[in-house]
Length: 270
Image 1 (tube, one colour):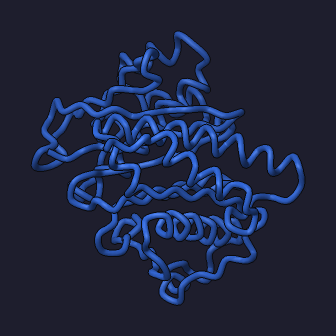
Image 2 (cartoon, rainbow, N blue to C red):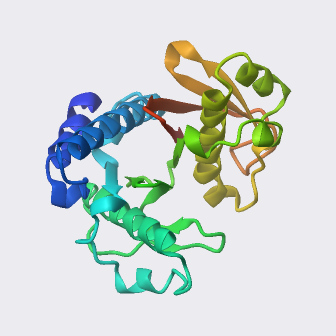
């Protein structure tokens, strides 16, 4: 029997949002409302990415999601092996982001039945997940989001959370965008569309770097916005490894909430 992905994933996620000690949501009515609405945007994006990656809708049984607020995460204790990753000279904000990101990863892992294992760091700073797991972590203060999938050799995933406040507009637009992308960005709200492009390309990098183990430049990927599907089609302008040749296309799903933009790639490997 196919699984109703919306019901299955939504029910698991929504049951956690009400547990402040689990989600580390900020205290107070406003904080809880913001937590729920951001969760809704992230969940919406993840559900569509899962459905696109697996038409049987069984993948949702193997996907975990965690969202943590840095403003109320004092109850999370890093794993002993995670403590040694971060430099003792790291600033307080970086320490908080790291801890909240690992907290989000822990909750995502719990969702797929993996408990009490650390998420370490690879050579380029990428998360090094426990055996049998692929995943991705993103930070945009005060929020951290993590997705974990228990299908390591079948799917790739990358997520990114950004805010328009961090975009420097024209200063980085030509660095991030190809000519067609730049035309699309300039045809609308420049800062909003540039944030969408930046976030989508970051999620592509996070999804495929663990496979190709090489730097993926912003212009190694060309994005085309498909409004009917609320996603970008990401075309590879370089080979990212076996089964990921130049010209390969994958969808990048997107959703915004207030100033935040969330992008998600879940791609079935050939």
